[in-house]
Length: 168
Image (cartoon, rainbow, N blue to C red):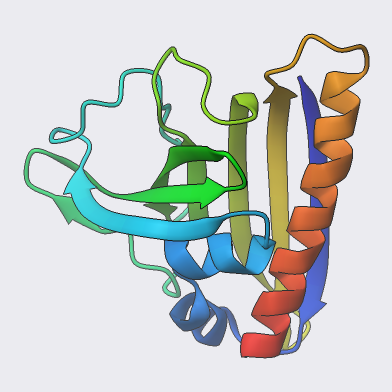
């Protein structure tokens, strides 16, 4: 498994950025997969076995709401597809942004053995620092597969930050 991280200063407040963010838009901005379906649920309603949820011990800012639902945390399941593959991503709103993970339990999903990302928005110098960190492992028995996956994921993160900057 490899980790990749990208960040960008965006001259808008965290509140403005929070309004522009959604699971569907993040997937669209990344550019590798198309959104097929979006389902709002709670962690108690999902049958996702291995999808982890983000935990944080930082104070809650006033810019991002952390939606809680009776019986579990509010989550969004986004079904995505690309050339010859389809899988689900589980998005969870966090106090500072989003955490999302391939949501297909123990089964490899699409090209990934594992893919998990954290998008955070922090105030900085009359704007915001937006950071996306991702851990990825490719579901392929070839040498350097995880390096290739991290390189490709880095491009997706760059496109997501470009899309967000253009949207605000």
